[in-house]
Image 1 (spheres, rainbow, N blue to C red):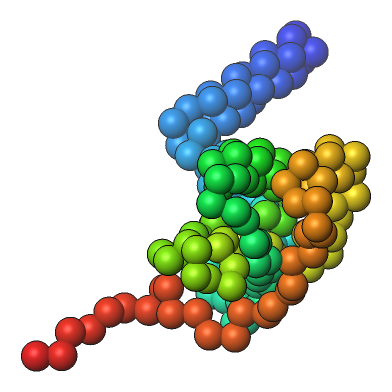
Image 2 (tube, rainbow, N blue to C red):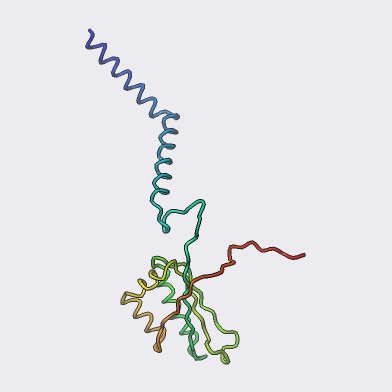
Length: 167
């Protein structure tokens, strides 16, 4: 009889434990515990590509690469199409942020008809993107006279500043 009472009490306590865990209150506690573990992990192992700092003390420096192009008027549409191919290649590379191709308003009289402006998270990411055969093919297709963008570090960036109007 005492053995039966022990099993009944154990089953009752297991059922109480299961009810406590699988109830709404138990589910809320499990979610809160999981979120606490995730936040603790994120802030104890910071990774700038994955985790965002809520209160950043210092923002990572970004690097800009600029290349000027001399293009004949009759080659401009073909050049733009080839540049877009190279831009698509860059867009899937790690560390890539954005790129722009700007054209001179007065095409014939400009020293350089186009400028390519790319922004990368690190200079190493840009250099790593240039180590493939696909890159070499796209680069050679774009410019036969050499392609070597110059690296600049962003010193002042007012894109995130609020605009104020003087009245």
